[in-house]
Structures are given as C-alpha cells and as structure tokens.
Image (cartoon, rainbow, N blue to C red; front, side, top):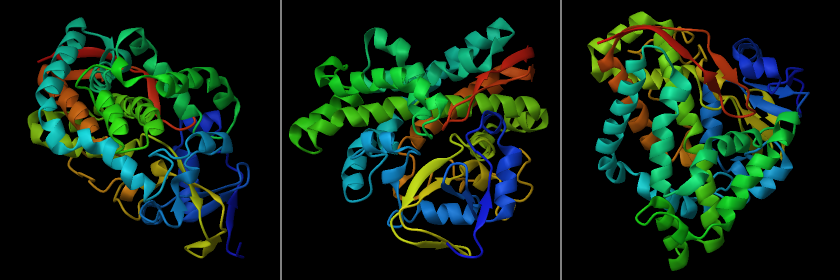
Length: 391
C-alpha cells in the first residue's frame, strides 16, 4: 500500500446503494480510479480506462476470484466464468460454439416472430407490466429452448438465476438466504444426464462434446449452469430498462420509432446507462499499480461497471440517455477474453422486442418502477406501462 491510497467506508452492497447506486458510485469514481473499501476489504476500480485495462489483463486480474466470497469461488473453480487461459480458452470454445453470428442467424426469424407476438399481446391489454409481461417472456422462452430444458424445471429457472447471482456477492444475509434456491440449480445441473435435454439443443451438444473428450465431462453441468444462471437475468434487465428509459425520455423513443436503424445504437446506450451487473470480482496475481496506487498481490478487486459506464472522462454528458450516441465500447458486456459469450443472443432478443414495441406503440407513459435487490445483477422488479397509444 502506498501513501496515495484512497479509502472509503461505502458498502456497495448496502440495500440503499443496490437500489440506487448513482450517488455512491459517482462519489467513488470522483475520489480516485481505485478506492479501497474498508467495509468489504475490497479494492474498487471506478473509472472507464482503468476498468477496461483490468478486464483485458487477465494475467494480473484473475477471474478465479470472480465472486466476493471464498465459498463460491471454490464452487466455481474450473468453470468458464472463474477460469483463466488456457483452461478458459478450451471451455469458452464449447460455450460459444452455438452462439456465433453464423449459428444465431437461423434463430433470428424465430426470435423476431416470438418477440412480435409477445409485444402484440402486451400492447393489446392497454396497460401491462414491462418486466413480467414483456421483458421476461422472450429470453425465458428462447434460452430454455436453446438449452433443451423440458418439463416443470422451466418454471423454476428465474428464481434459480436470481439466487445464483446473489451468491456472487459477499456472504451477507441476502446471499445466505439464496443458498437453498441456488443449491437446487447446482444440484439439477450437475446431476443431469445429457439425454434428458431436447435432441438438437445446445445443452445436448455440450454433453456430446464431453462424451467425445472435447471438454472434461465433469464440467458439462458447470457450463449448463452458466447458461441458465447468466443467460436470462441480464437480458431481462436490459429489455426492461430499455422500456423505462424510453418512457422517461419520450423524445428519444420518438427518434427510434421514426428511424428503426437506431435500434442497435439505442440498445448500446441502454447497456451503458444501466449495466447488467453493478460489480464483478477479480483477484490480483501480483502487486498491480493503478494510477498512483499499488493493489497488493492476492487482493479482492471489484470492477464497478456502473461507475465506469458513466465516467465523464470517457463519455460526454454521461447521465443523459441519447440514442444517437451509440457507445459500442460500453463495459456492460465486459472486455477481453471474458467478454460476454452470449452478447450476440442478448442483442438479437432485445433488438427484436424494441423493434416490435416501436412498431406497435405510438406513445406511452410509465408508472413508478420497483427494483429487485440483488448482490450482483441490476434489474427491475416491476414497471407499469400506462396511457399507451397503439400504432
């Protein structure tokens, strides 16, 4: 530690900060590019440039400490999420094989058709909840079908995913209460047999790769676990936030409605404004200098995506939602070898919902949203859509 070390007593996992991180994260970002959080014994990276550099430096900032508690880091050992090259490279190839642009091309028609039906049904009601009636529907259907999940398990997935995200944070009360549900997901994915998944699905293909020896067979369940835990919650949150931001900024909604080619740029802006995860863990493998501060070897690091995405050193007027900004370099999907493997699918789903919504709605208003408190993911619990005028 050096004389220039900046410290803070802020607890980034406190309820009031999880509900609204803006003030606290702005304070940390303006204090220094790296701040030691006394409450959690964590070093927080707060600014865009330093976060991007750390995400690209897996040799110094290891993903073997992606969670903020030792129990989960041990459970995740050897998975794509919590490994570094060369093992990560091998596992990532299997994970992303069915998520390449070429692989997703044929899926686009199905996604567009389902998105249009879901939006049409919600709009026909006049008032609806943008979370439960809209944002949850498409990712839930698409991801479970892709993996090949069948039967009553489908009804449990959302609860399982939220619990798994809670366990990536510190072992606070919220995480402890999530153990039973997260344990159900772990037990199901690690005890499953590949032939229980639908034939032709990604899930079945992963188990086939294990049988061929392309990946260690014992890791097939780990990969399925990651698909289910991370493949829906973040996309659901992003779609809901897109509707919220359009509702709060009707002039920006009008721009996208008038020019649908802005949809990809608008979604990038949604992801910049509201990162899917407010923080993710890393561990230093040596003494690492960030700015004027040395983070000691073996330290737990928190990458503050929300803070970095709103850094005025990188984005002009960062707290404004501007659909023409097109921040393709936002941090929400990560960067480097651990960049989100499922981002192509997330974009297809979100673009399809936004396109259908803009086509079927002339104007709308939103009520007061509620926030679901989670140690890792940032998502809305509800978002009433009112005073809707259909196109």
